[in-house]
Length: 226
Ligand code: NI
Image (cartoon, rainbow, N blue to C red):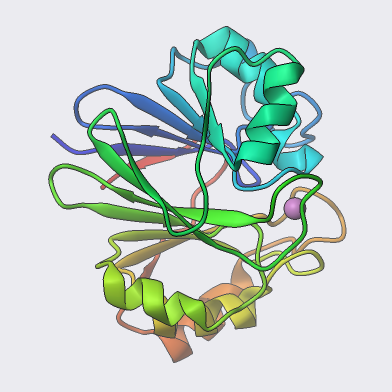
């Protein structure tokens, strides 16, 4: 059985592990102009992972955990904020830490950005069949990615490419040289007018910088197996 990865647009993803457990990362739908579905359309989920505390990532944290029954995972300051706001089940962790969440080992890694609470982060999810998924969060290019690329054999990387608030396509392509993923899916673009409207720059630069990595461009609402 494979795992399924569905793009909820922007930085939001729904991961259905082979055992049926659902993990959501940065599910932001209610104010999202390109959301492919509504919060009410989300399935029951085990965990919601927050990369950082910005409205376009964490703004629906309370509503999504209420609807899905999920435990909210993030830095203590961030989950503490949303716990006070109504998210009942929360689990705090921090950069470098790994937690077994229902058979998936979730490691919080660093990102370079800002955050209303805590500090920005990304996640590495290690599944029980050996598959590894990396969600970069919102970040600029940083050389610690080389360390994560050495520590983990990454099957699927999810990288922001929109520019303005994060890496653009050229920088994200450079990140591939450090992360060395088998596949990469671009995210955090074409949501707002200030972000890149297409993945064309990333596709061109990635082909030059990291020809061994397969770039997979999907539309919001679509999913892939890995
Ligand atoms: Ni942000």
